[in-house]
Amino acid sequence: MISVYVSPEVEAALGTETAGNVSRAIAASGATCELCQGVMTDGGVNVAIAQGLKVRSIMCAHATCAPSEVVPYPELLMGGLVASASGPPLFVDASMSSLGPVLIFEGEAEAGTGTGDPVSPFLLRLLDQGLHMVSADLSVPVAPQWVAALHPLPTGLSVTILAPGSRKFFHGDVGCTTAKWYESALAERSLPLYLCEAGLGRGKHPAERGQAVVDAARSGRLVGARIACALATDLRQG
Image 1 (tube, rainbow, N blue to C red):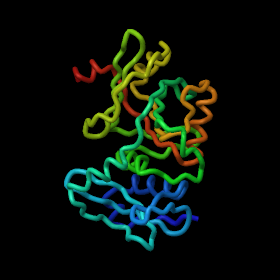
Image 2: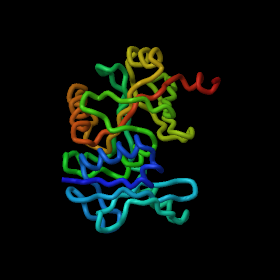
Image 3: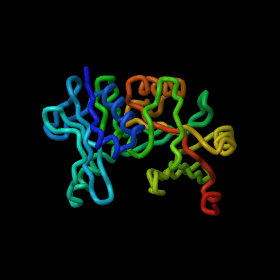
């Protein structure tokens, strides 16, 4: 059994909500120790932060390897930590669900689909940017600073996802979407965004894919939030 420790210093830096999300993710799936590279599936896990001048990275370590603390990190070395947490190439799918229109992102590799796989630096980084672990019913809270800008195309739809600070998280073509998806997304002005590194069954029948998303949530491998969406032209005018 995993016991996750977040020091008051680290909790203050992350905020109580993000610290709780990170702790629950690690407790559900384990993590990899940044120092010895061992997979942590039981025992004590300390959550630390490597803090540069402009960016930071959440790190996990065995309780015997490092304390839970905020570590000033040389800016020249932060790029390597951030790159290691940036995650795999993402593919996006626009689907209709019981919650209405949704955007589903997953990584390129069909790997890491078991409940015993440790939570990745990629998912920890998303939690640090205001996303949440997704429950089995797929309900998600709002992430106020995340936005989906929709670009209609003659053959489908292109989407730009903006993360906090108006940083571009994703830009690409999601292919053909139904008129119902498009109209519902614009009418709601928001939609759920789900992300998983792998294992959501790209190319499968929508019913199979929906079950894969639920399974990923149950095994602690799915993060997301409800994010604002609008036509890209409306956002530029605003």
